[in-house]
Length: 565
Image (tube, rainbow, N blue to C red; front, side, top):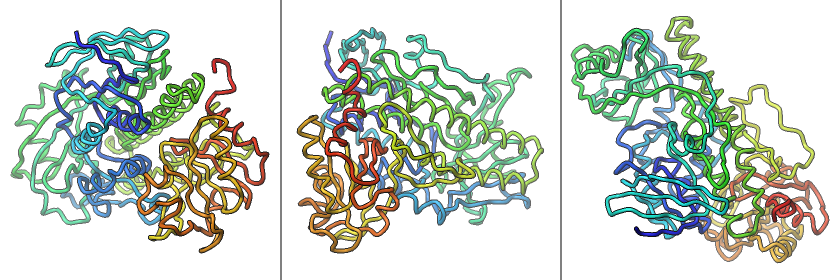
């Protein structure tokens, strides 16, 4: 039997497993990904890529490719409601692009999962530290105190894998989770669903009827745009208690359902595939057991309303990867890994709850409890969710509080209030560089990043902290005005590697400046903000701080001052 030794074994090759592999590779962790299916998904499944996930794809250099493969934002980031697609009562509401887009250098995108997985797989397979194997099944897993052993079977034979950590991204029916005895809590399934993928020319529909998702009442169903050209998906359900089953959805039944939903009896339609699935909402009681971690649907399952599930799982991967790398390298204590469940489980629980609220609106609409105007108002309002997607924050031992309160908004689901308060995502602010605007998010890489006003002396303190701790810190100085502070700019190799146009310690040799950055990040002339490798603020000082404050913050975040290190 062949023997393989890697840092991390990733079980599951969907979007979450592939993103985990990409991010681990960026941190220099050797990874073996195994996926039992022979290839990526042939079904569209998830389609909505949130603003936060798009920011990660941007950091990996994939934003343009994903946007090209996806659907036009201006046309399809909309929701529709009507009796059928062609009925006179059909109404549509588009996303608030002008209101929400300024919060990020990118924005929500619609790209079906079958296309996204191809892009992610190609990127993962290109990573020198990653070994990606489809058509490979894990047949046994034996976790231990120092790692795990797993038996893998694929066409080329069997292998015994020895690894430090295991990440289970093997879906809602996770065999790894069940094997660990971790329960998943939530209500009974709220719907037995059928997805019908079909091909049809709907070009006769006017632009005001184009939407990412249209809820229809006769019969009750939904139609989703897949490629904005010819591929579409119809979602409907059946009731096992009244004798319904997936077997009812013959080709003839599917053709009739599609034509009825469009409202054109003789419409030429080709049925491309039929997939049964359960609509459910569950959260695992724990996201970790020893050196085995759950991510994505293995840890939490949301209803599809809102498009949160895949995105929440990708944020799991982003949160966990840097922690595994830091502990593996010995720069962090093992207690850092305990913050994975502490940080991600509350976010997952809230996300699942919000998806349930969205589903309730859909049910009320399908039952006729809401008028068309009421339905479109509520559905469209819930499609705007930047407060949930960008405004979530962590509270754990890997965050050093600064005593400031959580920003309060009247609608934390819709409204996002940018803040650099510790635990929150570092806000996007446009800076002026040599070649034009540079987002603060583009300066963040797989290392810690210290951002400060120009001339405050923080790069020297960061260098001292690195010497004491062995932890690499990218430093960014930002001037308030053009030409302010000859030292303003970027003083880190990380930024030069990850940000186009940045080299030699500055953006094209010209300082980075912004009149808004210090206010947005809540710092005065001598303040600083330490951003973790996952883009969340770990520590902030609004003004002057002791010379050893940064070192102390690093040691606290990395669990170096807690038992076990």
